[in-house]
Length: 472
Image (cartoon, rainbow, N blue to C red; front, side, top):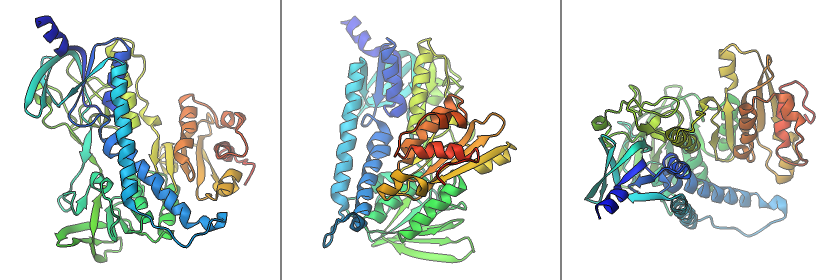
């Protein structure tokens, strides 16, 4: 009996958190023959799968369909009118998320990973306390991987209550589109929800503190998306400062100043706060275990192999900083598991992490922006191929945007790639692979791209960086 009890609580690896970084780390550890447990207080899949990436993309797919129906006349499709109802779309998004969460549970079982329900807290000495609604147990492991994720940030003048002032979570669970919505923050999250609610008939206003929407993207990308959103009757204020928000009986009063210093006061139904995320590093036992956090941001401090300062404790995903992206966390999970197993030979290339925004038009990028490349003093050539020159995009009736390629003249390698337009988030992978393999732009072009496809624009962008595009 004692041996049985020990076998249920002693592991080679314990992963605290079942989001993308955590469950992938657990799966890889299981594949490598390590006795592994994954602790999760909520649903497997974490924020991304349950209240982030996946349900948001389901809603964006629905929103795209709504927008396409609005312009169906050119395809010979006519009707007296149609109703766009957010409720069924929201229900569908939950179904998609639930299906994938169940899939993670299956994958853990397949790889012999124990799924332990409850809140994990490090105790030090290779021990983790698991609190499942007051029922506590202590499990031990040779190695512990912290993968506790992140949560939406509140600001003093923008306190999230999920009733009138939403985070992305609140925005996901609405079954009716309001008449008016202000989105504070024009990063990927803000622009995606602006897209969704605009499609379902909401009057959307976007407020951004920096000088452009999608401020981390290349300026050409930001400019194109802003123009597209304005054509859809969205109001956009950049270089704007929110002064206050006040919840009233039937809405929210938000006061802000625009870039010219003019004061604005809007009364709207709801406000969405999309001003970033902070790591879940409090109350997880870091102090008890002696794990250090970064001075800025309170992220778990790690090295290139995802080790913390404490031997046997590792951290991956949002709680470990760098880009707060699911695919980055997944790669970190694999790196940590392989180093624990003694077969780790690689690290994460943070300079080659793709960024994707799934609004319409889509935006995707990897590497340096044009401004960043010039600031670094690189000798570059820039190619920019518009979708208007691509037969497949024109045939589909979706030709807004471009493929932009920045090449280093010395080695002719891709310094940065930026795509705005149809299926940008899929096409960017070709540039990620090219950069990973240190391919030249000539090699990208020499790899034959099928016709007519959107992928031809990748080759044309590469040719553009050589000053010789064929179809523009």
